[in-house]
Length: 191
Ligand code: HEC
Ligand code: HEC
Image (cartoon, rainbow, N blue to C red; front, side, top):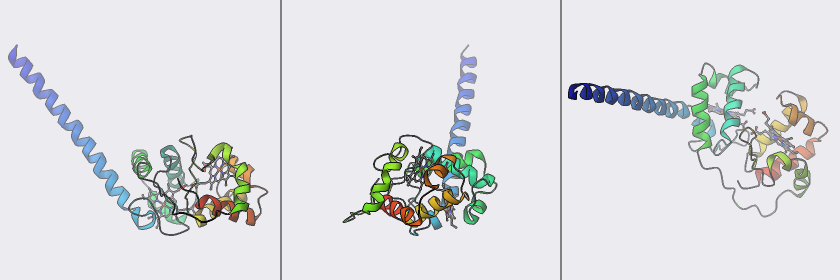
């Protein structure tokens, strides 16, 4: 009886050990992968280039979907397509969770937000929220995001080079000036 119990305990111990090791190696793999992103997105997911997006605190489901789109070539960007080429679904999920868990940028106080941009905001709040923070894991937060990046995305939705049926309808009649104003407005909002 005792020896059966001992054999059973020893087995359990090894199963646990293997499980712990695989959790550990997943975490190591995620860290290793995330290191390949810091040159452009910053060590803490805050970039220092207006055209490169902050990732810290972004919705995890949204990040994962975008990473898949870059990998599968349905969203095009020369830097991103080559970076995520060949990564597994699990890798993309770990990366999305990693960056989503980082603290988002708290914007430094802006004396006066772009007022024309604030007037455009009425067309955004139903999905992106009053403060540019969404309630849906699949929809991106846009507050505190880099201005050049926001502007480029809105133009890409307008000319169809980035596909989103929802966003294409929203921006189809926007002028460059409206895009610039609303991009500046959201880049000036804290998270
Ligand atoms: C050489 C620079 C570079 C590297 C390295 C890089 N990125 Fe990017 N990333 C970019 C640029 C530029 C964009 C914006 C693309 C665009 O304009 O559509 C971007 C966009 C993204 C987006 C879309 C964000 C959004 O709000 O839609 C995600 C997610 C992302 N990168 C994640 C990563 C991850 C994860 C890694 C590491 C595995 C990584 N990036 C490595 C330059 C880089
Ligand atoms: C009906 C819902 C809806 C409305 C209204 C809406 N959006 Fe969006 N927006 C989305 C969704 C969904 C996405 C993700 C698209 C994708 O999957 O690529 C998105 C993506 C974006 C992105 C890309 C963010 C990134 O990190 O790359 C920007 C910028 C953006 N929206 C700005 C705006 C602005 C500005 C307005 C108002 C003028 C607006 N949106 C109105 C649903 C909406």
